[in-house]
Length: 373
Image (cartoon, rainbow, N blue to C red):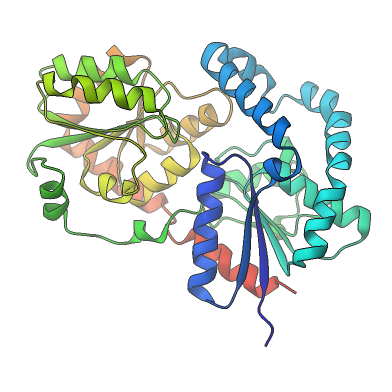
């Protein structure tokens, strides 16, 4: 039997889209070690210079003028005006993409971001190619840029997300509410005592895990200072992601912190950190959200980015698995209320577990291997 070849496409190295793509790739190999995969940053592959320009512009906008991104995100007027530009970009990428497909000859394609999903969908239409295409949404609110006729299956985080796609004309039979793909290790339950010991933390003290997504965004410095000066009985784990400046700043000051504090750069053991934490203070990126749900970890949301994270926040608040602080000072007050209300923490944790879908990557991998030609 011939080995199946699966092409996985994402955009941006330091992103949830990439994390999701890697989780699915590992699941494919776990199900069938003979499966051949190719996991590519599609934007960098087709337009490396444009990718750098867009990434830099995006980060500048969300940091300095987030209201602009809020206006642009899934705005029907903007969508209509950029439709022609999108078509031009897709056509300009046709040559490189077709060469990739002709060389690798995949039996199926999985995209964890709308841009490559659109590229493949247009390629299928232009060249009359019947290759199975799966689009994997990594946020709870689907935007219009995901809608293409030639996508065979959409993987969505929840039934509610799927309904929004249906409202936009997607056939319900093409929608699978498997959840956001995360690493299989989030299904494991390692010993907490060993983790606390390895990190020199106290097992009987409330632990706040503070994160700002992969890139360590948000008012983390101010938040940490406020929490350290507060009278709250807690210890802190701060995961800085790729934010080296934040990591250096915290490292240089942690010896003066009153509370026991662990400062980490890009942490490869988020599953363990979430496993021992009492609450996570974070931005609600899709992957972080899915991982926290899998761990049954109550979320305290601060400074969500407009657009997808604002939509994620709405979903999480409505489901009762998160609370929100409007600013760092407010976070301290809300966190104090949570820590002194063990019953509420328990209810939030139980609800999070009930919403979680920790085997999403495995489900996606199984589906792909079933429908791959």
